[in-house]
Length: 626
Image (tube, rainbow, N blue to C red):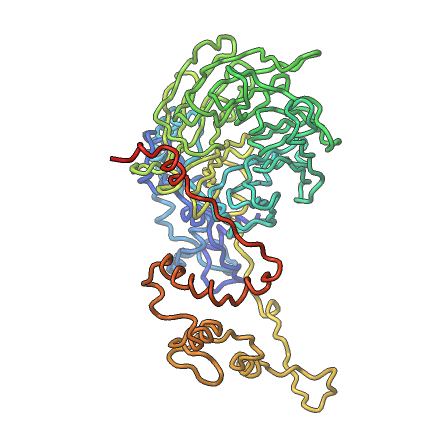
């Protein structure tokens, strides 16, 4: 009913009736968030299909009514035509008869907006049909918003199953929580946490019921938080002096990844740099349920860089630092021996693993700049290896689209590259590149996710100085999520928001209630006083004065006294030490001052041994040197 009233208002004068408050049309809001057309993308025209550029939108759309409301039609000029009715005309005059006679097919008066031409309707249908064929994957790429707040690259991302809350962790040691329902166009987080002081946030995972989430940092202890960000518990750290990792109660070095069980809300999985994977019970923070030690080519400790559950939670996959992929099936009596072992899955550390929902495909991402697609029934060789995907972050992941027909991953910015951080999409069936979407010209893309309910793509990016979460959406394909917060304007500040603090001057108040005077002058006076400020004495320049010894006579008192007493001469540096000592030998023997008088009565007479050379000459007189 309200839409009909707004449409009819176009036929009335602008001064007629009560005006509604001016609101920003939703189309103009989405135009402000529209991605530029010069973004690097390999898809042809799929990104511009749903741009709402058709000349005549649907009759039920609010944008059409708003266009009439903003540009109302001027009232038609009065006509002198006579009517058969004797009643007086109330309200604006009827439209001229010429407008009715123009319609050959319909003899009735046109009420409401004119119908669009038939040709434009057919063209629009043809364009939409072509667009549906091109955009059969329904990729939302037309608009983009950025959740900012981090000062370094965003390395962790988690969206709850309903799509109402987003968690992002960064290398700046903080975790931020965003709520689409309570967020306005400023896109600010409602809570900021620091899980572990001085440690990067490396992984975040929601529980199946989305009432708790797991936070994995660079420390050896993972934490559990509730939905509002309150700490529920912290897992124990193991004893680093125990050699066998199975005998420790927890991880002994920094964690690398963690994921909640997809079905059971009491079980989580973590991996660490100590070379082990551990399964925990969230109700017992003092010890783990199971310790998994990967298979190694040679003895030692190789870090486990990533881990993942399958769709049903019956298998665990681990990416090892030596490039191997190992999968364990959880069954009664299972141990650390992997059921599937791929020795040389990648040539470098693995950063991300992902199972398909049917349990047939495994995706792996690595530092070697490749993304590999594996068939779990035949793991000897990969089905496809996509190369030239730079990766410089240990948290770079790989994900599926909601229908699992597309594969997503991000790329890092190289020093001499001009493409920037890209979000790459690959076809799972054809195993070919579908699109490469430019996210940031200077920042690397680390984490990515495609939410099934919102139909929105999330991609985290950043560098050493900034970080943010980019959300790609399409107003015609996406629902809720970014559409809710973008259309909600921030509340304007009113006079009630400002509260001026009153200043009361009462010079005759008691000392207890009297305002303390400014002590700025007193502090400056104390700083000038060398005794009160404990200022050290400056060194002397030139001759001494005031009882202080100058530099010319030596800076120390002992040096001054020795020089004045004649015990130190200025030429002692040029003399030979041996000659300087021997010249006092005769004087010390004739007139001893210190040691000899003290032992004069008891000192025995020194007896010196003869030289060996003299004895040899007496014994062998004929042997003389030539």
